[in-house]
Image (cartoon, rainbow, N blue to C red; front, side, top):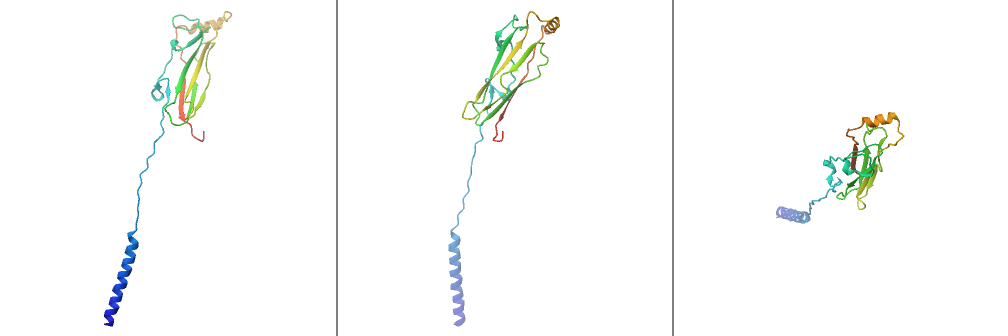
Length: 176
């Protein structure tokens, strides 16, 4: 009976240990989570045209003339005017850095200049999200011009003059 008693004690101990550890093992928890984030919107337009697809050109009718000496949609020495264009980033949800630069204007006739009022701007999200840029075109000309200048001016007659402008918009980062 002693042997059976030892076996019985061993079985009871195994049951107690089993029940104790099993009971502790029942309390388990796990969780899974799914998170979502939304990327900020990016929308930059020149006028009403998306900047990504903009192939904008301007002509005589797009210029606000302060002085015009040419006839029939032409300019001549003594003419002066401005072109205004607006870059609008209202749909963007980030700060936007704008840069505008005139390209090579060395091919313009002698005495003609093209200048821009501003070359860069920062549009701050939550603030003003548009910027107007102005290009001024001026073709000097006076009665006292030299024969050389008159010859240069005459060489431009009938030609189409090109003033290239490059606009760039990029997100402003905290390191900018």
